[in-house]
Length: 512
Image (cartoon, rainbow, N blue to C red; front, side, top):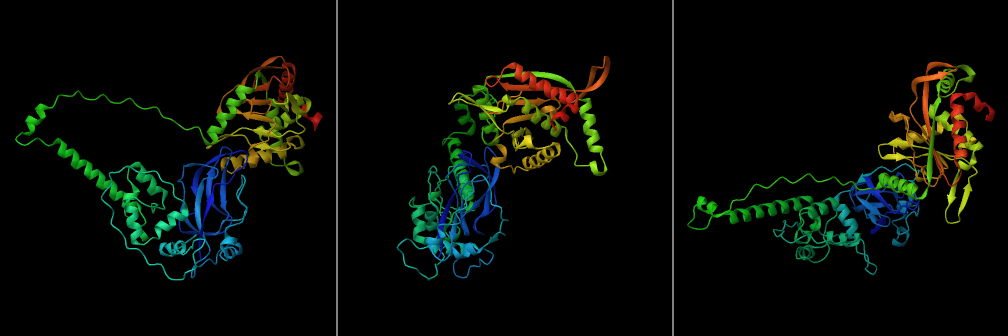
């Protein structure tokens, strides 16, 4: 016996209240096992795969790709419990055991994610025949109904109804009610046509198509199994509505009896040609990563009294030191070192000297909170937008360790697989906007941090070196800081120390 269970969008953690469907990983009719990822969703923090806590047959999906759903909204329904003759040999033991009783299956695994997908590999998707799926759902008894092994006869297919003039009515049906409508006999299908009972539609695409063309699904008779309304039924109703509208227009334009077309046209007042409508402005919803960035930047500008100072630095020696590191062979050889990794290590050394900038402000307690460790964020531009992955415990890492972690997090950001935990908890941010070919900027602090260092492009420029004019590799450094945590002297000292390390990398040897 089967029981239809509804799986709702779970709490994704980090205070997130909604998510956008990016990609469905299962289709209606697929067999899923417990904790198998069924949908990929995008939140304001990251893109995650959502596992289903039930094992069984997918009977319905709610929402199409691109739809934004709140936490707690239905995602899909699953017919739990294998009917007689249905092969679930590929399912996990937990899934097989779920068919023993409705009480046991209703519990599922309980391992609904909080911000993460499950670590186990996804099971192979298998489809079952629609007739078997219908019988699986139809055999689910009510709370007080006795078990019945008699087969369910197929309802005859009904021709599409011709009346489509009524506007579409908004209706929300639960999965069990939908299943009951799908397996109802012919009499039940007629009741739906008369505008009573739930609408036997499974596909969200069919519902949206009907809404877009003002088709009342309650006035359609489905041609699918047991009266199920298919897309072909809605397409037919749309064509019929268009033909009816065309006939009505021709009748309205026909001349009266005894009039020639020329006379009928002469009686109509002349109308000036309508002016073309001006192009409408494009409206882009602020949601997902873009919405989260907008909210955070607005909060930073509203709450933090920031100030910015900057300085040009001769990075020639830093670039030479990096080249020497990457050219090393033998026992001293190691992984390639990036400029960003060197700058990150310089920042951790500077924060050890100026801990005021590694802090945050508790506005409710009116306290400055000095943080014990450096969790270094770095800005990364991806196809999904701007993200700031965090290198944990940056104060304990050397250049190689920081570089390896930056590379790992950058790859996760590129593929959209960063978890919310990897995007939060930073104490200081490094923003290398030089990769965009610009020299300077005034960074906006990543709330609730207290400072951000911006780095422009490194370019050959004329520079006075040892009393002579020379062409040197010059970079502009910008520091934006929260004026509540320190004064300009502290911020200037921090920036000057960073510039000294860029110009003379040997200065770092003091802290190694």
